[in-house]
Amino acid sequence: MPTYDQQQTLFCLSMFANISNSEKVIADLADPTVQGKIGQWTVLWGPVIYYHDPKNQNWDNIMYVAKGENAETNNPQYVVAIAATNPKSIFDWLQEDAATHNMVSWSTQFPERGKISQGTNTGITVLQNLKDSSNRSLLEFLTQEIPSQSDQPIQIITTGHSLGGALSPVMALWLYENQATWNPTGKQITVNTQFSAGATPGDQTFSDYYGNTQPGLNQSSRLWSSLDIVPHAWNIQQLQQIPTLYQSCNIPKSSRITLLVNSQIQKVKNCNYLALNPSTFAMKGQCGVFSQPQTNPLKQFLQEAYFQHIQAYFNLLEIDWPLTQNVADSLTLTDQDLDDMATKLS
Image 1 (cartoon, rainbow, N blue to C red):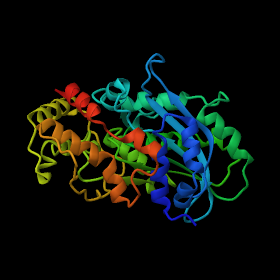
Image 2 (cartoon, rainbow, N blue to C red):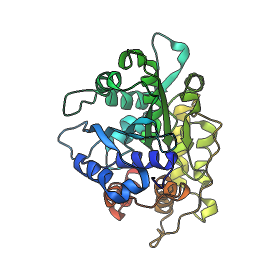
Image 3 (cartoon, one colour):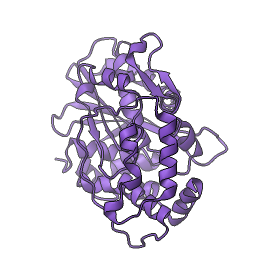
């Protein structure tokens, strides 16, 4: 019996999506210690790694599908895990995360379903078109896989953290809307999602549409921390909280962060962003404790922000950090990474 519950298991599976090496992902999932925590999972599709610039060694998006059992019901479930932002990917930062001032209709046929950011649209389009080693997209894989399953209830759950936390619920909605394609025989399937630390993908109309889908998505799980700046984007009222978010951690207000936030507010002031599952209460974050605390105000802010965006969720969900060395290698922020990030924002 796995020691982690369904929520913890899905979070762990989302963390493995950040490992940019298929063999390492499969090896970690086969590790007896990992299986003792999350059970047995078999990778059936991917991990597929996307490079916007093939000459660049920094990956931009990763997605895989693993099959296992629900930790609580023992019913079969397919988990679609989507990677977070790669801090070294300029494409992620500029084309997916920060491309928020232009919006795109979720459905040109049904404009009443709202709009998503240009960045969200870019990211979800990339994921929809990824092909595995058998040259199958996610939709093509499901179209082959699902009809061959038994008639017992099946769950398909998308999950992701950070950028993956913005894209995974949108992916779930897309799969939900296209069930006639990949579930032609009408299997008893629930599409759901657990997304963490994600920025807001769309406007209030899109949020309302997402929340009214039945069944499944209206019961999706949103995980976010009160001290994580990323889920505070891109709703105006929440953006305004960012410059002073870490004063309780004895980190002074940074003039540079304030300037950047105010600039972003001007860009999105007419977009009417609202989080998916907006009524979900935030988990109460705790200030980070660092062996080598920064002294520069901007670097202090960034060090705290990165801790709150990644490792703090392990603490809040009572999951062993870093789970595996491969996860640690993919998520740990080095001093050079912090310097580079500060330089980009200076």
